[in-house]
Image (tube, rainbow, N blue to C red; front, side, top):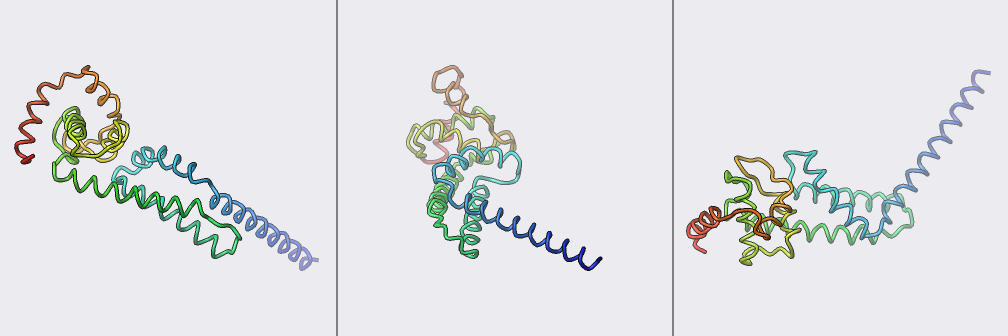
Length: 195
């Protein structure tokens, strides 16, 4: 009787494992087939949360994290032979690699100007970055992309992270923020940089 009961329990456990395995495969297939645009949208919206939750992380860590997750999904799909073509994930990895190269290039370029880890006041750092963008020294398609870069990489007042720079950039552009003293400092800064 107890042997029969044990066999029933074992059979139920095996069925449960098969169900869990099937559910895991369905979830893996779903994740492998998420459209590229949705993956990209998630990437853009979750960056600030990742950086807030991981204080010592930077954008390069965030991008590498997404690359590794996508590679793992592709690898599992192939290993389990799920008959799914993860084209969107492969396209997403190519996109992430481009983002990684862009971030590295911008960080390398900006590090020459000693703005990333600055002891300057918050508005001064934002004004310097804004002005360098306007001069064409840094290539950002618009103020929103500049703002994201500043929030991700630039520091002020001995290492504090800059947050919500977009409104400050808008106020600088509209002339709401008085930047006269920063203009003078910026001119001195340019002379020291041989620009």
